Length: 362
Image (cartoon, rainbow, N blue to C red):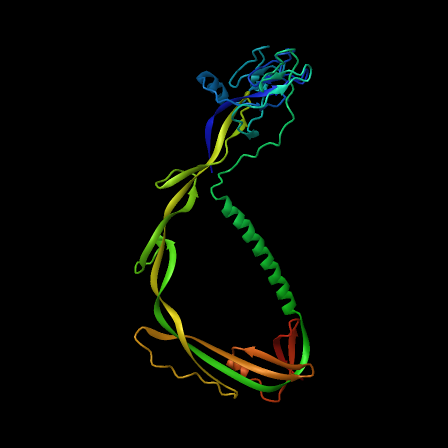
């Protein structure tokens, strides 16, 4: 994220003695003459206008003002001695800077009603034009949070939803794991066994995918391509679009604020559909039985574009228990050969009534 300067605006400060609102660059109160104390903060003006005067822009860029340690007078950045008492400003206190004042205020601000006489005044007026009473700041609105570039608000919403769904799935998986791992022992006798062995038949078939153009396999047939955001970065680049958030004002500590925007660059690349031949399961051959001599099925005659695929074997052992019949499934032939008909076993049965493991009964 890079910050771009839109321009500079004047701030304002409120005199703690008479509550008069003063322009930020003003060092003393326009109403009572009190010097600005070093603990009074600059605030965002009700109506902001970008400064055009080069000399004033230079003041805004100069840095935070310094308050004399001896007399408290406010001096511009870079001053070596106090303009009021001549004290060395190396011991002075520079004002804080960098505080975010709020989103930039554009357009005319609502007028202020004088609490003394009821007359309406311009938003930035320090005193009532009719009776001269100080015009206090209106009730502050909730400070606007500086807006980052919102290039895909709907994507963020979906990201939040997806995150919530993922969290629920994670919790459900944890509960399932806990319940699955909790078992009780049941005595059982092997009543029957069965086995099934399957060989998949695969063939080369066209499959459609989508990816960035530079990631597509050389042998693929490229279809329709569209421009999509590939990534974002801080620097300009070819085929990139600048995206900026809402401008906001940052206190410079000098009676001015810098209006900035958080910006980034969306770099676009081609996202393409493409077709490539891949091995896909098109058929299978199986063989099964109820004995203890499992065999693989004979492989069929295959065409030039076919090949044998994944081999899958499954073995089932059926137990008789006092609670009824239970089935235990394994993919290991070595384990399957342990279960002689009539042999006795201790079944580890979980909350879902599934056999998770077995051990010989003693």
